[in-house]
Amino acid sequence: MGRLFGTDGARGIANTELTCELAMNIGRAAAMVLTENGNEHPKILIGKDTRLSSDMLEGALTAGLCSVGADVVLLGVVPTPAVAYLIKKYHADAGIMISASHNSFEFNGIKIFSGEGFKLPDALEAKIEAIVLDGAKSYAQPVGNELGSVTKAKRSADDYIEHVIETVPTRLDGMKVAIDCSNGSASRTAEKLFTSLGAECHLLFDKPDGTNINDNCGSTHLENLQRYVMENDVELGIAFDGDADRCLAVDDNGNVVDGDFIMAICAMDLHSNHRLSKDTAVGTVMSNMGFGCFCEDNGLNFVATDVGDRYVLEEMRRSGYNFGGEQSGHVIFLDYSTTGDGELTAAQLLSIVSRRKTKLSYITKVMKQYPQVLVNVKVTAEGKESFQTNQIIKDKIESVQNELGKNGRILVRLSGTEPLVRVMLEGLDKEQITRLAHETANLIKNTIG
Image 1 (cartoon, rainbow, N blue to C red):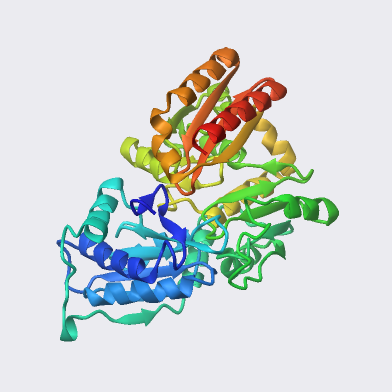
Image 2 (cartoon, rainbow, N blue to C red; image 1 turned 90 degrees about the horizontal axis):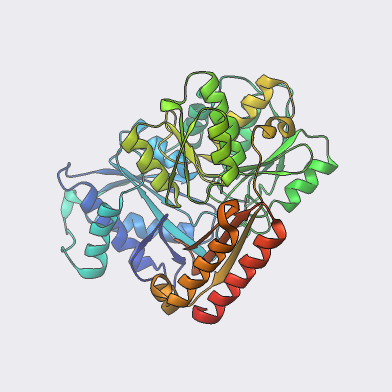
């Protein structure tokens, strides 16, 4: 796995890359780093998604945490943002989510949240890595009554659902919504949440069996949801990923409404209600050029960060902004949540549609999307290491940008969670950017693939 943490926690194939031993040691080190000046028995929450390996890793993390004196509260299957929210509600010192988000079931991951409910900054993750990988500090070995205990939270999902409901200004009475739970964490919470708000819910992929999470469903596989919306009497569709921290939508015509569209709709609503801090929306370098144009046309400021909702959030906190997100569907309403929250985002979007008494396809007209092509290239570990310094690739990127000129852009970057190089092009001419994207991807594959 190399170093432990990518842009969204530690992640790998469960039991070969992300082993029980590694999970146990991450738990030990995390408790030590997060409570260096804290109490003797820090309280740490653990949530998980529906993967077969999540129970195994929950046990390993629990053992590691208790072995250094931490008290563990097991939340069971909940969305990632539920962990972040419940840390403060339950007066915990930290929280851990076991999930590999949108990846297939054989992968799993460990996401760590501070006592304030925020994902850990790079500096703290580096401290944990130094203990686990480099032996920078010996693990604590308390004995007797200094060992940690384990309890189970009985209302974790209900407490989270009640929190989301409290953020919604308009009920959804009469709305008919198709909801793709991705056979993941939303399977436990989505029906109760949206039914409580008044919606008639048509649930898809809400029967997890440990191996079907994200399997041709969810926010990365929208085809079935699109088909369902078109063939059934519903107004729109909502899709979550495995741990429900991201949300995408399908409008009444079956068109995908991605994170950029959702951000534009929500930013405009916040702005019109004088609730958009500093009239600014924070996105990433992957945000569609159309989103920047939308902001400019409507008197809003747009700030772009590196890819990863953690970097969006860091910029929001640093500069005093309260709204941001990613094209992938991580949207952060900082007034309500300390991380991307798919179900909260869906609730806000549905509330806007309900309040406007119109169709989602009409509301999306607020933004014009530039044609965009994304090609993923599998690379070797050695290729990933040499990517940044490869002159052949650098020359190709420069050549493509020169050909596009001011009418487009190329962005080539390493994935933070998978052994991939992502090649993204935007421009006015779909044929041109498609050709250039595949030319660039083939060159990368032949060079470092």
